Length: 417
Length: 96
Ligand SMILES: Cc1cc2nc3c(=O)[nH]c(=O)nc-3n(C[C@H](O)[C@H](O)[C@H](O)COP(=O)(O)OP(=O)(O)OC[C@H]3O[C@@H](n4cnc5c(N)ncnc54)[C@H](O)[C@@H]3O)c2cc1C
Ligand SMILES: [Zn+2]
Image (cartoon, rainbow over all chains, first blue to last red):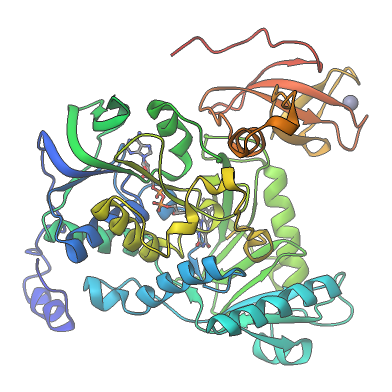
């Protein structure tokens, strides 16, 4: 793998940038792999990378029905944080956060991880109490999170309306200062490049249409383009399409797929150097390095696979943003889109074995799986390498919906992100 | 944006007046005291989540506040039929 560096950039400038190495190969699949990963989103690519890097398993293929990094990894609003409520989640998201903090160096690829802080504004006494509880829980877990009052908040974010005259006046906020965002595409590309360099085959335009299962055990997958590909173990990481793949394997999941929309404005001068979200008026916003405002809110309430949602949701989202940032009321929106998110009833993900032996699922990340990408891949690689879950992943079994040991993160997951 | 026909009001109304309540025709266990945890869990949480035809429950929340069923394509979002509680759908997926 060609090493990226400032010096390299200079060197290639002398050759008019014409002889850069291809970033990854485009191989034809082998007939048999140790591990097949279905889905080349952020989580699938990260899984492949850590399988090769930490477990020495390199006879691995990642099968992707479209082009790699074209699913939710390309559609999300890139918020990264680890201030969830329960110990299980804290361990999971903080594991991910620690990997984020070294990711650009680890991958030799600039994922533009920016710890610019994430604020959760509180507009009611109920908001204040639940955020104070979160902050207290996070402190006990060793995760940074703090409360600021409205006056302090106004100083930190001048463009935010913290006045008493607002329709839902802001009483305070919690802020995780280590949180922030990253460049979504770069995360997919960085993991893809690093996994490819370690020998992983990235097979694009390869759709899984069935599973080869005999005597309750998976032996391979059937693809539209290359027929049957065999594998000892199969990891399914297809986000919004998890229900479709589960159906192929003959079981149901505690998951429903919903459209989640986002939008960006025309680029404007920098005025917001952090991320602000409100569960109460229901919207969140950050500003990208390019200058566009990145805005999102909630899912469409019905099951949908169409990668688009209803206009009403966007309208409510914009109402919330204009309520919080009145100065944005004349900004024009540039683009709007949707992704299909796999929502679990307790707003926590699934990293699990399944009723089919040697078939594992990593799904249910719903509206908030971008932040989990490194951690999810790292833990799922462990699951696939050992055939049983890493201790951090153990509570996230799909069978918690049988035992009742749910990990209810509806409060901390709040407005979709 | 969905335009939904409420069979009780006999009118098409904007989606904003309605709430989707998820998969329809989920039968409550007849003998709840003797259900295993697995049976309860599946009843409460596990769903078909189909890519294609979906039979789902809706409520006309800011209208007549009554429930009804809808058969909808989850990819094109086209509503194929609307039918009342207690009735069976007439548009069904062919076995695949
Ligand atoms: C609008 C929006 C905003 C979001 N904002 C945030 C945020 O701010 N912070 C955050 O943490 N999370 C956010 N998320 C959630 C986050 O994007 C997802 O949880 C996460 O990206 C899912 O994991 P992934 O990257 O692996 O998914 P994907 O990128 O969707 O990868 C799944 C892949 O599987 C492939 N696939 C599906 N079926 C098959 C098949 N049969 N055969 C082969 N391949 C198949 C798909 O083509 C796709 O490439 C947001 C999501 C959306 C839609
Ligand atoms: Zn009605």
